[in-house]
Image 1 (tube, rainbow, N blue to C red):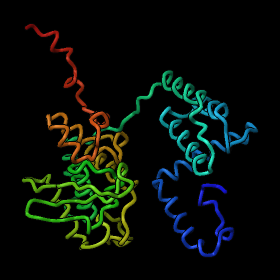
Image 2: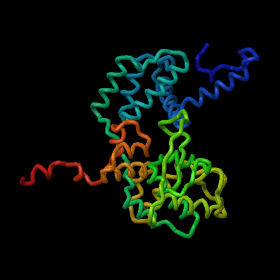
Image 3: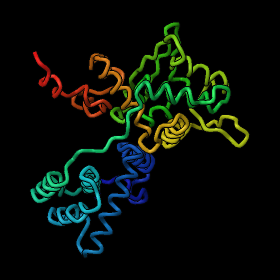
Image 4: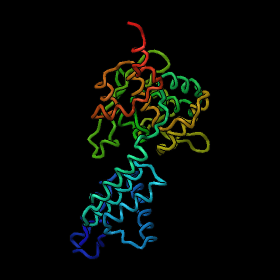
Length: 324
């Protein structure tokens, strides 16, 4: 019998197990994040179609087949994408009760060779550092619900180094207000798929860049006291009961960039998070403090977010040329 519970027909098991089995199937599906499931489905379909065209078996597949597949795909896909395709193939074999063919020496050597030839550096979008966030915020219409929502998203996203998926998942029940600011509970995140939860404290600050104030102003103006924090609007401009999509966050950031004269193509939904880390590093804020906000466990991972725009802050070239 296959170890992939989602493939087991409930009619083939005793009636007493039918209901628990359906629950087990739900848990199996939830063991992998929804976005990852969608990506894996695309990767597996691509691999299966390639195998069909080459007239080779896709499940179980052998190491030689997979090595040939990623070598062929290397002309069209980045090494990071190829790694994800391998993860999809590995997962499908795992849930189907087959050994992992991606551990074959041929596969490991091929992917290493591809990475050596093409490089593994990833192109990151521009970080939205404080000066850019301020420009974006100032370009938002202050007297409209859409403008107030954009201000709140930009400031909260930057202050708390939120991922866009975390922003759209926020619920009013996740907010705990006090005289000092607001404590936000992130119920689940990319690095916390089991839902242990993390908290982000956003204090009140003086001036027009107070994220806690912007959030409160948005909620009060939109008359939201329960349910999703960030929502879309219906045709008459009233907030919907459903949350924004994570794609909408990226659009809001790009639109704000465009309004203040920045190139929207270089910004993404991740720019606020990257900007927080970049800003913290440029100000000499301790990594431990930054990681407490971002949720990172390793400094090496934090390094990848440090996209300091002024490379002159990192170089020793000028120092070694200056007279002693």
